[in-house]
Image: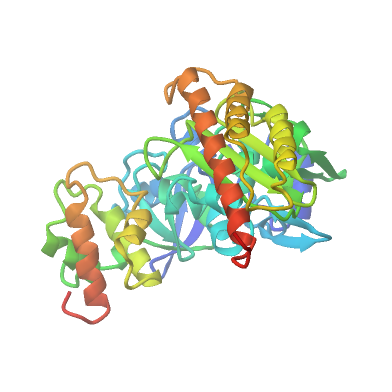
Length: 295
Length: 157
């Protein structure tokens, strides 16, 4: 085994082109476990933790670009404008893990339990990949191809993710046995997109990959229109619409039984998380609509 | 491969297997056994050290990633004749039973108090959520953090 230590992205891409089997390592919070337990012996590793291009985030044309090397600690400290992403980041491991673990690691490992992934799915983020041949941008739905599988080419590195900044309430929530060091039993991100009048819901840890609840999303967005809630946040969504939404999200899960939970518990949890997330988002809109309304 | 690294203010070198962790290098090549080897998967925090001033689990850092960087370990905090206020607070509170988790906890508490000298209990609990102790039940560890926080702010604790 050997370790490559590129100083620039350009150098790293040239190395990846020459050695397609080289495994990139950033925070090491997934890969080092495999090395320590002798589960994996890559022929070579490449330290990408020093590449400046990966460690940046920026706003560009109404979008946010988030570099693959940005750690969860930095997201919590610097990206407060994106509450669901911050909420998800704060649930990653422990302070020591968040100080090292990166968004690129969640994307590269492609586990359905990766905490940032439901948020990126609900944002509809594109994944930006780069190789010595050039860059390509994949829509979210094309990046994750299965459990721990993604569409990354052998000569490519994950540069980061990019999403349209949408105005609207939203949250990330996660079910697990404690408030730290938890691999999600089930997780959910819900986003209200005020411009497009859409509701987007993504589920983690309840399927082979991150799942969207498209049918439930469309139905609840229509119910919000029918109840006049988009224009008047003080109005209530009929309880039946909330229950239909929760049941629809639960139905979108494709859970299995494993050491962390049963399929039926996970499906049940998805319904609960969906109902709560919708209630929080509608309450946030109501609170944001101002106190000056006549009752 | 040969790793050059600054440890506790001193330049050091070690010849390690390329897949070795920073923890293995510290303990087995450089004789620094303060960081403990327990879970090897970032679950327990017993191997907590600073890498360029950031609190990390040494078991999850590839030794090669520490090349030309600064590592600070428990050994830099205090010694028998010169005990760090956090170590002193652990002694006073009786926040130690078997002692295996203590080095990692002392490092994590020192890291917390350097950033936030007067943390409330929720902040302390979150800051120490990556350090497991299977003996004390944490109550005395929380007492130790309060004592250390008072001392470091110049009070009597």
